[in-house]
Amino acid sequence: MRIAWIGKKTPFCGNVTYSREITNGLLDRGHEVSFLHFAQEEPEPDNWPNFKEVSLPFIYKSQVYTIPTFKATKVLTDSLREIKPDVVHASLTLSTLDFILPEICQELNVPLVATFHTPFAGKGAKLISGTQLIAYQLYAPFLDNYDSVIVFSQIQRELLAKMGVRERKIAVIPNGVDADKYSPGISHIKKEFDAERLFVYQGRIAPEKNVESLLKAWKQSDMDTSTKLLIVGDGPLRASLEPFYGAEYGIIWLGFVASEERRIEILRGADVFILPSLVEGLSLSLLEGMSCGLACLATDVGADGEVLAKGAGVVINTASVRSQLRTLLPLFQDHPELTTLLGQKARKRVLEKYTLNDNITLLEELYSRILSQRHLTSGRL
Image (cartoon, rainbow, N blue to C red):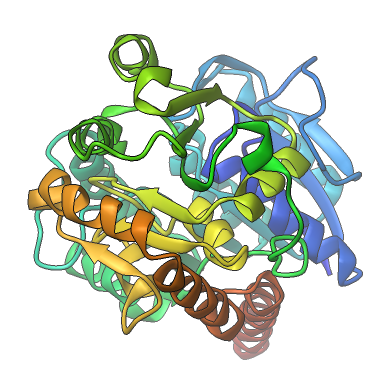
């Protein structure tokens, strides 16, 4: 199958990881993949697939949204006309191109699939006011013009359906992780940081990630000097937080870690993964931690609570993150047998429901179903 993939290549975020892992998986299955993205004259990201690429011109891009130039529409249309894909798959980048893609693909008579990553608070909770709520309200009418929209959980499916996207167009395909690559294994990371117990946060240092609640809880928990917290990632709040939560409290700031091998080494050597976010989609970082056999603590937002439900981890209420962590951090420090058990359950849950292999299979089935429906429809005309 010939697939035109539209997504992000930089800067590093969950959308970038998603595009890299899925396109790698599709290539491994023998599909022909072309990648259209907003990235020009930049270093090749870690472990990026080798395929035909098209750079779309842009004015501005960030981890959150992208502003394309006026020329980008023509470049995209001409490229798709040349590629002649069987399916176009857009890993939505929060750019204006997301809204005109259905019109372009209709003109070219090619089916269009979207993956909608935008995070949300969770079942029974309001969307965070601001960008997340606006994004859902803004996108819903346009998503109904796609042949299919991929979301990560039933909760997200219900949310989009309430906003007017026809349910038959919404496919639930959870994120998946390469469980062979992200697996328990040998690591010397504890020795490197002189730690007996190691906790990890991996993600952006941004308001919606709620990292400050974790840092305050850690500082107030009076953890042992041999217990360390690694903060892996960068973002707008790092400069204001790092000076107040440093090495004197056992907190080590690693910044953005580009090497995937290094990130895997960190996860394999850690005991506990913590994700205190206020909004999420389905965190790939969480799945990676689970797949490496870490005990995982995460808030009940997006699909993260669903992933950890029924004993695969500890689910935290967003209304009391700091107070719950103040209780849980010392408990997980002092009881290694508990973290070992939870780590085994987390790994088992990934193998049961969240592998990249299963994700690719479901994606192939979706593509085939859409193409079959197209052929049936055209045959009746």
